[in-house]
Image 1 (cartoon, chains in turn purple, blue):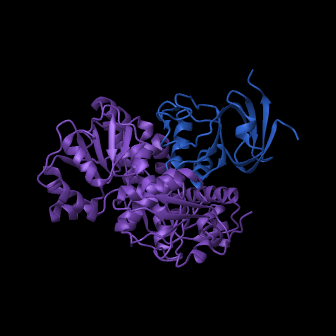
Image 2: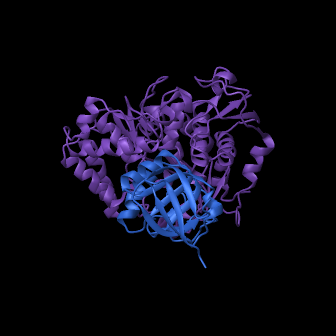
Image 3: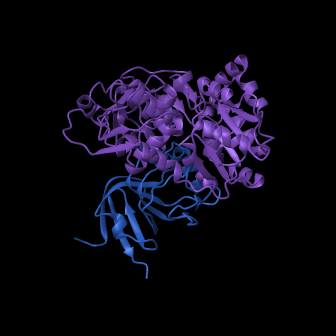
Length: 414
Length: 139
């Protein structure tokens, strides 16, 4: 049973309205499932809420919650969504669903949510500090917060994060507790990781082989300082393939100054080694069909300004093959800056489409859009997206960033 | 030991009975499921083409994403939801999604449900008792 403070009990008794009562009731049930004994206050909430994933019933839930006068009591931001309104018609998304997406945004804003529509809030909106308890969703945001910042969050799905925003707290289980933050697996990195796709491939190898939310890999022997974008791709991939929410990297992440500290006193844990040959084998394993490229996607997670700058350099003065579509996704803030700096214009001049506030794999009506366009092979430098998009029946292929650009220009894989 | 009884470690939701769909591959409603039909649509998934509506899905692991949080209520609202999700290891998103949708979910098993239950068997999941019972074997 969870111990409730008088404030929490009052919420449970409905003193702050029906929406808050439902929210804390749900949180108590989840907490009890995981054996939580109490709540922890959170300072920041990041939630997924878009019409593609929540459906009509989710929109009805938001309307009801708003009618009840509910307001988020912590700074709350939104994850990437399923519609970029400027491109919805061109992509042939459903006008009805697009209108519902606008209503979702309106409901959330009315309840004190900042709709920033990004899955890289940790690069652009809020950077929590060591030990800070937060309630974030999109798994990529959670693993970055736990691992790189040393903040504390579980995977919080849309309704769970929203509940935390209404109550200002979350059940204390999982990665809020010291005992789950210790490394459970050593990974000796004996590979050159020169591209974000290589880091994603590393995440795939470790994640797929150790699927467990409570597995915490500890990376050792990383021979140089990785960049924020590289850690982002590693984390997103571990979360996607392994359902993992935290990793340590010795000498890099804040809770891992030494292997001993990262393991928290555990004497022996399983060890795996990842070599250059292992990374190469990841790339080789993707079937490529007839070798033509349909879509080349830079998304999942949204691109940082520096990733856009790199892509602009690679695409400058070149043209995407007429049989290929190139999609790049980022958030509103980064796109504004990329326009100011000219990166966006360079990419668009080459024939790329930049979508804002969305992630490619969650686009509304994507299965039908794929079918209508006859898209088969999807090439990306994101290990996450080649995994997450598969329900839409793409044939997905992971390639390094420069190779993705070459494929987009050439129209073929090789 | 009763060969038709499995104990689970953690559980939530109402008692349900139904036909088991068993897979050795993990599950995500985002990656694997066509949420407009309730059919597993990921190319090459061990359950590709299988309808999950009203089934009791028994899988070793949860995959990835936060989508399940909304998705379970959505597919339940569309009449496409499984009756229960039985995981060897799950993640909080699956639990949050199941609680939000008032759908039965369990985690952990002894003995191994993947060895004990075959697709087509009829099973009862009792979260309060933390048990799964095989009621009828597929003939």
